[in-house]
Length: 359
Image (cartoon, rainbow, N blue to C red; front, side, top):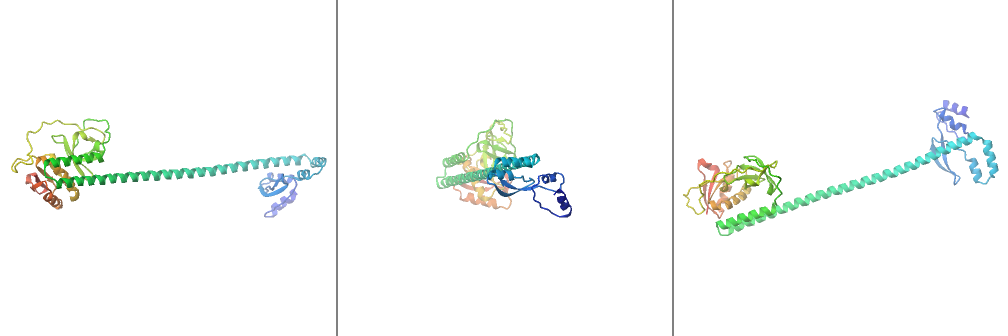
């Protein structure tokens, strides 16, 4: 049989041979051209499973089947003796290989199950991560909506204050009430943030970027601090005058308060004669350069309210195309607190500055 198989290996492309010879099962270990294979046999049912076991030789089950079918034990034992010990050793080796194969299959099935569970766990984690991301995005969207709602409400309240001021009696007291109302609206819609540890020694200059902790805003300095330790800043489209003590540098340094001797000059009251000397300060000056007409009107309204006690307001609109100056003049013409206005002298800005006299 060995000689015949070797001859076929030399001459034929493929040979499939079935045999019960145990010696042929060791041929593959002597010649790499040969390979063992068998069909699985279920000893409990005495039926083949028709599963092809590649690489594992089949073992002889004749005596086992004979014993299960009722052949006398002494006959089976005699047959085992006649077969010889070598055949029995081969069967034991093959049985061990089959046991190892079954163990490997069990482990492979367990590994496959673990892999499936890992994939399911990964999918669950990915799903929860996606839900968390969507929840964060929805939370941000809701916060943005709340902010926009608060801004719209603040604008409506400011507009209502302006309408009440325009419709009511034209007096300094009403203007002061309107200013206080605007401050109250600002404090309500822009809650103060806890300031960091102060670091004194900062002196803001024109063009510097500074922080306003109580408003939680970053602003640009438009004018340095005056004798009242107040400076003009701008954040976004809003300009405002703020105390030097309320600002700090971007790295947390508090502004250094410079004590200056107060001026002996006094500003003319709102009821003073037009010929009375006029004193220009940061409180009765508003810089509208670079603003749109609609935005400039809001800044101008606030500046008029603050300048009521001074009786005069310097409006810096620049020359440019003249559209901003025309918008400012149109607004002043219809404002109930403005008595008259005129362009400034050349030394004070000429056509780029308008002086408005308040009632």
